[in-house]
Length: 108
Image 1 (cartoon, rainbow, N blue to C red):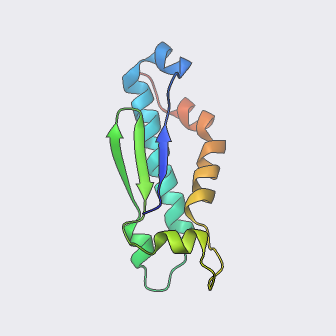
Image 2 (image 1 turned 90 degrees about the vertical axis):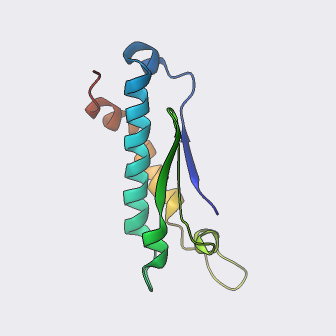
Image 3 (image 1 turned 135 degrees about the horizontal axis):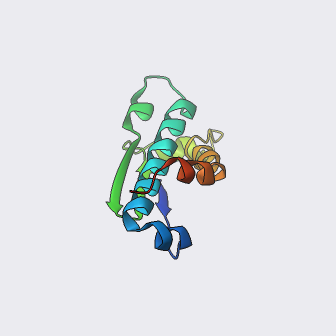
């Protein structure tokens, strides 16, 4: 399964606002990637789109990816099929707006 890992290390804002705040930012970013990927995923039966999930594995690490085996073939293509990326573009969109996302997550 191909997936996107969201991980932040040595994050100065995390030192300032605390691990709880940084964890909430990573979690919000992961769910934003999931939402964008679901809108970009090609739909024939809806199985690929419905299988995209987020798993928060550590406070500063989350994994977003499809639960179906053919997700990587759709993302990267094969020699018989052109790639139809949905996960990488979603991660790029969220990465560009990460500062704004972090500002919206209020420190406690």
